[in-house]
Amino acid sequence: MRFVAHLDADCYYVSADRVRYPDLIGKPVGVVGNQGACVIAKSYELKAQGVKTGEPVWDVLKKCPETIFVKRDFRWYEVLSRRMLAMVRERSEAAEFYSIDEFFFSTDADKQIARGIQNDILNNIGLPVTIGVARSRTLAKLFSDTAKPLGIRVVTDPDEEREHLAKLPVGEVSGIGHRRAAKLLLHGIRTCLDYANAERRLIRGLLTKTGEDLWWELRGQPVTPIRPDRPTHKFLSRGGSIGGASADPNVIRAWLVRNSERLVEELEHYDLKAGTLSLSLSDQYGGGDSINAPLPGHTNRYGPIIAALLRSFERCWQPGTVITHMHLVAGDLKRPGFVQRTLFDPPDDETEPLAVVKRDVNERHGRFAVRGGTTLFIPEMYRDRSHGYEICDVRGKFCF
Image 1 (tube, rainbow, N blue to C red):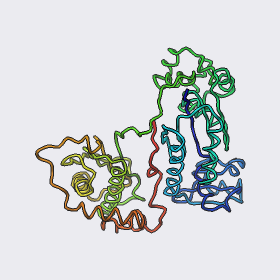
Image 2 (image 1 turned 180 degrees about the vertical axis):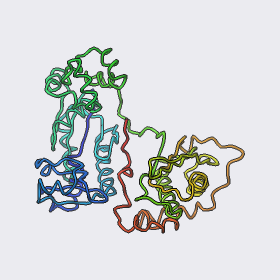
Image 3 (image 1 turned 120 degrees about the horizontal axis):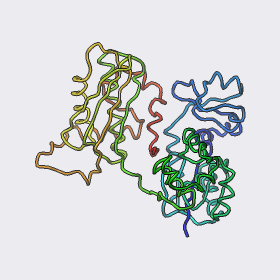
Image 4 (image 1 turned 90 degrees about the vertical axis):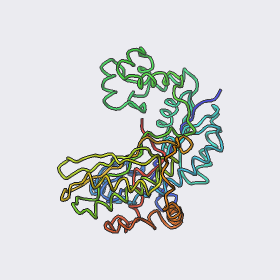
């Protein structure tokens, strides 16, 4: 019988930085974001001082003056993530990229197999990981979460499962947040075992089908299979703040080009073509406008995408309006082999050879080594190399 394993890297961002900078090992380390104002990840040494994720650095220094701050580097984190996934796939016939530092895979109920994967990753990459093995993915994640750091927990016997579940608050289950836990508490459901022992129809009524699926999984009956291939996206989007507030059309267009280049990157990365596009602009008062950007057909080429967005921008933006945020959304996504061709397909984009050269140069010399000239109006976004990668550019993470 095959079981489900959940592998989770311990303090991943900090551990990844320690691979490059071994002097950080054993020291209180906080990883900060672009502006360096808040801690987005922390070492166990820093956690022991009461530091929480999201705390401002000045509050962190009050709790732990010896803290060493490191600026995040999501490109490096993804490099190590791919190496971890490759090692897992060498040992398992089915492995799922669940997030940048978490994987599910099929395995035997053999602690030595898990130990071998753990040691391979630690010795060859330098990352500490924890592994849980169980009859379902919910149980596997629950057991790995409670075995950190650098632990291995194999629980496949139903009686042993119940012993563990009886000790764990129901809020420990991935997918049960504070609100759901509070709702369950009104019905006397405090522990994971209480949840598994509850009436199925009660759980379904309280937490809908999602809660019922968790109920089955906590009882050791897998509902969600391991998915080696990521489900096709329904949408891809890029955008956010434009770095302040501006009514300068050159600055706003520069952000439109920047976000368009990032959106095309994502379409190419996942080998998808967009059938629809929309552009949203938000003003300084919280209002704004959204407009569709018609495409000539399904495409992931920069030329027709930026042309459609620029036309829509001219219709959407009123001169003099101060803009603070922008979002681009690509929908009706299809893989190339599933795009229906017609007698009136647009001609090949004459700029496509240039796009190939641009992509090749950027892969060799940096993500924005070659970029649209319109972006010259926002040079501050390209001076700091850390702006080349943002949280949403960590690929492979998806939410339910």
